[in-house]
Length: 226
Image (tube, rainbow, N blue to C red):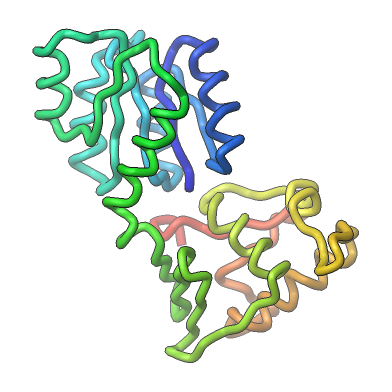
């Protein structure tokens, strides 16, 4: 699951990123509304955490912007603690409102609760004639089930979690190990990606799902960019 944090206080945002990545979330940080809108346009996120007081505007307006364009949960994390502020935040569509200072365990619980409400939509990914259920770890191509090995799935899932962004070969190598727990080498990674393509692509010589970014790594495009 991929989370966007919109927070101009680096101490808070860096601490959040560290804690949430420890919980296996993928986390991006932006410091203002302009940066956040750019990231939201170019990437797919499962949830947004945002402050109300931002350098270039009001987080309330950003929440409205998100809710008008995407069906994803938004959680306010802010020092504004009056009843009026909380009501205003919830009335514009926020899924939760947390007042600083906060406890990371409670925040993670609230994130998971918000994601569960949206899970029906976010765990199904359709790419051309391939349907992937990331929760059940099942894949179908033209309504026929595709079986991946555990390592092939880890590679594919890493790419899916970073859709729209290039995943470097180094990152894939650091995450992938074989059935005996041994980390694979660069040549083996190429072989595994080829095997995944053979199972998913209509033409492995002209792949439309897993794109090679020469000299860097691989990418699965967002739906809007394909």
